[in-house]
Every structure is written in C-alpha cells, then in structure tokens.
Amino acid sequence: LGGGVVRFVRLEGGAGRFGHRGVGLIGECDRLGDRLECSGLTLRIQLGRIVGHVDVLDVFASSGGFALAAAAGGARSVHLVDSSAAALATAERNLAHNHRLREVRDCTVRTTVGDAFEVLEQLSARDDRDRFDLIVVDPPSFAQNQANVERALRAYARLTRLAVVLLRRNGLLVQASCSSRVATDAFFDTVHEAAVHAGRRLHEIRRTAHPLDHPVTFEQGAYLKAIFARVT
Image (tube, rainbow, N blue to C red; front, side, top):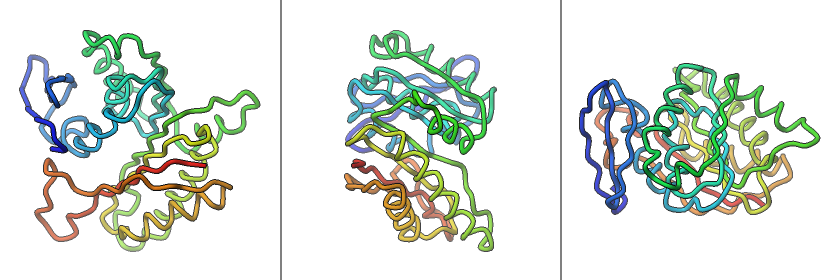
C-alpha cells in the first residue's frame, strides 16, 4: 500500500492497529470498514509522509484519521472540525493512543464541534483568523442519487472557496470526494474553478483514486477521488 505494510489487529475494547514503514499507529474501530482503518488509508499514509512542521486543519475529521497521520508526520498543530462530538472524542482518544510517538505528543490539538461550512465561514470572517499550511477536506457523500449531483458540486465548490482563503501562500489543499455519482473529472474541474473564483490557483501535486485497501467490486464502485494541490 503505497510502499508500506498495513496490518489489522483486533485489540481489547475495539481498537485496531495499522502500521506503515515500521511505524504503527493505533486507532479505535468497531469494524474493519471504519473510516480510520480502511477508506482512504493509503491516502492518510501519503499525507503523513509529506506533512512536516506545519499547522493543519482537518475538516469533516470524523475519528481523526487524517489528523493522526499529520501529527505522526510532525505537524505543529491540528485543528479538527466535525459535527459529531462523539466522533471528535474518538479522534482525541486516537491521538492519545499514539502518545508514545514524540511527534504526536508535541502536536497541539484543537477540536471544534459544528457544521463544517459554518465553522469555515466563521474562521474566514475573523480579523485575526487562523492560517494553515495544510487543509484536508474529506466530507461524506453529498450525492446519494443522480438528482443530487449538481447540489453536490456546488457544495464541493463552496468548501474549496472557504478552504483556500484559510491557507497560507503555497499551502497544501487535500480535498476528497466519496460521491459515486459525481464524475471524477467534474469533481476536479469544480475544485479548480472554485479556487480561481476565490482568487487562488491550484498547482496539482497528485490525484488519487482507489487504493489496494479499498478495491472496486461493484458498479459505480470507483467513487473515491482526491486532489493534492499547492495553493497560490
């Protein structure tokens, strides 16, 4: 998986362990398919390798998979945003599970419970607004059926516009979609156009799709897509 070795081990209390390049990270899960463990695991490994000493905003953080990867990768701080207080509590425990790693211990952690769109707007409106070096935007599916596709694209565009203005120059945007009915090209085009409308330009580093840990086994199964891009 992206040059790493991934192992799943059922631990007491429902915790699962995954490791890459000999560095294991521990995270709670109730089943093998939990977001922290499977969906986008290789993407999280890639993120952890490129982070460095930066400030990170993790939007739709869920149980903290991206934030944990960033902290383990040396992030100075991680700010997790999610509408679920329970999910953020799990994320905080997952970070605590990994305090044996100096990088995780030294990382400053902040959590905000709230609607992602509203929280991003509030952060943008502040005169002393925070700036980030890396923002991860990984929402749940916005298009459960074909009729929702246009609305989903508008939501992705809005998220892009809100995120890019919170990035420092040359900051990194990682934006993902798991909406099966949103075409890959339409998603990437929407993200690029929204950044331009916000007065920023994206310089792509890579695009990712389905990794080995999330094989395509059914019609419309190739729904995962993400973009890594520098923002100027």
